[in-house]
Length: 195
Image 1: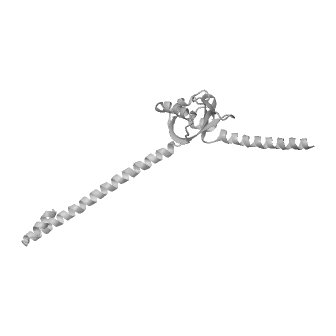
Image 2: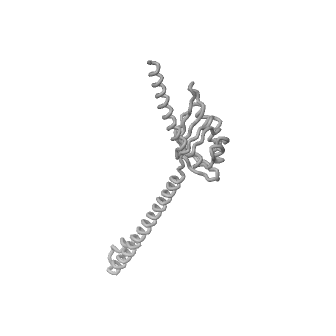
Image 3: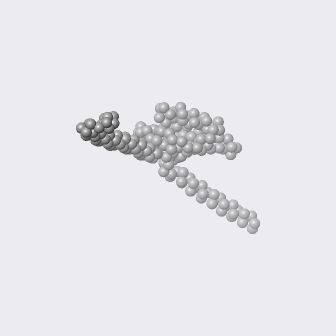
């Protein structure tokens, strides 16, 4: 009887464990963010639906690829160097990078990276969560451009306004100088110095 109770508890625990893992697998598989796993040579070992949507490669295509193939030419060596640094124990959490899509577009991505270990604690792979931030980066550049244009416009308006004020002062000073000269006052020299 005690054995049957233990078996039922174990079965219930396994069922709860299996349900939690099924839900976790569904979250990872269906995430809007790209979730990938790569070995330390850069070979892609896992590719979720978010990665397919972001990069355009099917899971079958991606699992035959190396991470260098989605890095732009000027970042390919960096992608493998990062894996080497991670393998050597360097801690890297999140960073911005650029990646290439299947159709050749260059996108900006925010990458969060985690090293994966086996049961003995040995590093075996790297998991990444990648979010397309291309639109955010475009808006940042646009905002910066607007801010720069605004500053130039304000500077030009201040310059023009100051120029108008100085021109007005110069005209009034000249008028004052002429007025004082006509009265032959010594102060007319001071008014001439202003102009």
